[in-house]
Image (cartoon, rainbow over the protein chains, first blue to last red):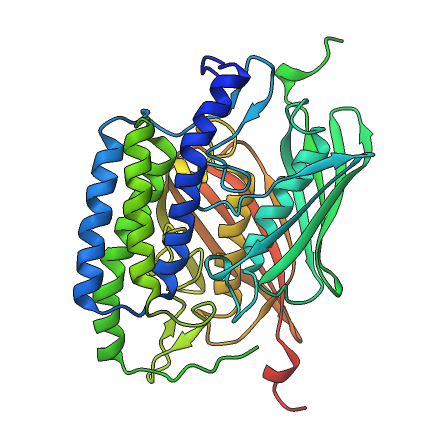
Length: 208
Length: 208
């Protein structure tokens, strides 16, 4: 794993965020409209030309490869390319995960881009979100590097598109293994439950 | 669950696909460039204005709500909004799943939008893909409606971004429960293994 980007200070991180976050939000809206539009062939051909021109402009100056996992000089995480929480990834809702009293939680809204069964969240999208939030709980907000060992999802009923909540917490720690649990819920209660075992990598373990 | 779209015939499905698939591909490229660009504030502000104008144009005629799960009059699936296989969803790679001799498989490539740990696939993205392909194997390509009951993912090592493969197959069927297994692999072998139990919904069971 390479964490080899030069850290930037909080002011520079805020400056970059102010540039790219509203743009990413605009692309996220475009993503939704791309799935739902009924525009005809000429309009779509014209839209394609415009999008290709924008993309070519953006690519005249771009990093080589993916965004990476970056940190500010203050140690704040900048996982801006992440598909769950990334403020520069139009695929991410993005989740804003809160922490307190040993728990993580997040309130979010999923639309057309996350649909599996009609008007319901794709089961794998629930798995994506739960993997992420259990990992956040297990790693104490990213302070301790951890990798998923195993995760089990139990689907109680369909998860409707719309307003949802997810929560996660650590059940216990045994040596290099951290056991976390969590769920996704709608207004009527949990729809999917998860339990996971997260492993501290050898390079991040306390010397024996 | 509502499967209430009027089916279209194969010719009409192909006509629509020819309009929207290349456009969705262009938005998929934009999504990658959005994460990786280093363009400055003026260029990003101009790109934002252009994207917002395209989105507004697309939204002048759009369906009310998500795309839904549609079928052609020939019974061919049109899950075009699906986040794993949807040819109209810029979030989807999209996977093209092949079938034969009791197995499903797919070769695909994941880039910057799917990154979790540096230069590696987000564990939850692997879960999303495995949930989908195990479901495809269990439902015999969508011919039998099934919902995920439980799924367990075992992460053997990090999955690098780039060229990957996924396979899935049915292990056994016991009443309403179908047991499926599968994996994701890179050139060096499996990186994540999965097993899932899929349930036939009551409304789709054979009358007793």
